Amino acid sequence: MTTESTTAKRGFHFKDITKMFGGGQSTLRQFGILGSLVAILVVFQLLTFIFKGQGLTLSSGNLINVVNQYSYILILAIGMVMVIIMGHIDLSVGSVAAFTGIIVAKAMADWNLPWPLAIVLGLGVGVLVGAWQGFWVAYVGVPAFIVTLAGMLFFRGANQWVGDSQSIPVPDGFRVIGAGYLPEIDLPLPFNIPTMLLALAGVAWIVFSEIRLRRAQRKMNAEMAPTWVSVTKVVLISVVILIAGWLFATGREGTSFPISGVILLLLVILYTFITSNTVFGRHIYAVGGNRQAARLSGVKDRWVDFFVMMNMSVLAALAGMIYVSRATASGPQDGNGWELDAIASVFIGGAAVSGGIGTVIGSIIGGLVMAFLNNGLALLGAGADVVSMIKGLVLLIAVGVDVWNKQQGRPSIIGFMTRRFGRKEDPALETFDPKANYPTGQKYEAPAVDETRGK
Image 1 (cartoon, rainbow, N blue to C red):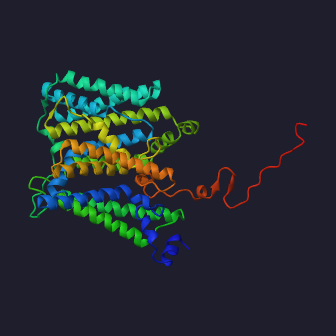
Image 2: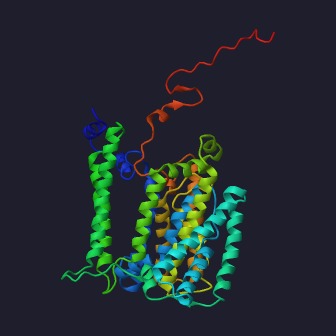
Image 3: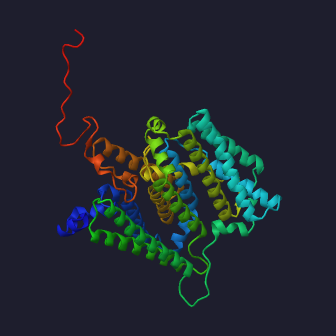
């Protein structure tokens, strides 16, 4: 008899709801940061309705603005979570983004470089900068904190030196990656067709992923959530995707889902796959969790360090170009404080300071928490000083509560994203006592000691 049939017979149990987002392996901790995001959206929607006369947070125009304004921070969070999983930190991402932006702008303005080639040039700058910093971290052994602190200072100065502390405009074609939208199709429909097709593709991916997950669990004879749980999960997520798609597709004329949001979605899918389903991804977690053990297992930890640092700079370069394209010019103050927002997103999303724990999806949700917190306070007219204080308190409380819960032996509230979506742990590991070297439940008897030995 399969696990699925067994769970179906025992009927409804409230604890089955805790399996909604974990393939049968989750606890209530999986609802922590996601619940916080939902709460922030609801609270600010109500507050803007009360004080502004209409709910602004979930309006089409506001959602489009949030994606445009924060997509580059979320892109940085994707790379930063890998750096933090490795036990490092990167303080240079804002300066690297600004340095790349000024070089790309100068290349188009002074060298008449076509904007597609300018994007390639910017990514190449990211590779070179990342290789430089990765070399010092991986092969010289300088702590990443020091290397990237030096990089923050150097590339901030290089940005101002190259641009002579002036703003340099970028051409209209280049602006599409930061200020463009999915195109309109000339059909008599009251919404943007590509945006709704993108939403339908998201729903199809959710359905496919859940079917594949249940097939894998059935094949491994693993514990499965009841069918109603999977159906409910798919329906809820699909409804959210379709509603969001509709809001993006019915914004003011000339707008739809931003191109920067499309780039972000593609990166989330790519890096989620890399960190969850590839050997390299497992090496990142292995080195971050226990570097010495990973090294003894044959993992080339220096190469992993090098690639992760280089990858971070490439994503920083991309984020810088997206920002410059949206701002229509590159300036000497670009990138200030970006590294702090990216780091905050990762830690709020459940990453551990000590390394070895964190996910791309968790970091994106953490980044959205910060984005909608900023946005909601701005809609209510809060000043930059108040916004900064509240952001600091949110970061401190989120991480503090998580650490306190772990110390008390309770489920981690914001660490729910640290388990890979749908991962099934090896049953043998759940019933194995490494100290006794016997399966749990069997009596362990210490070997007899020869008391006459040595006399």
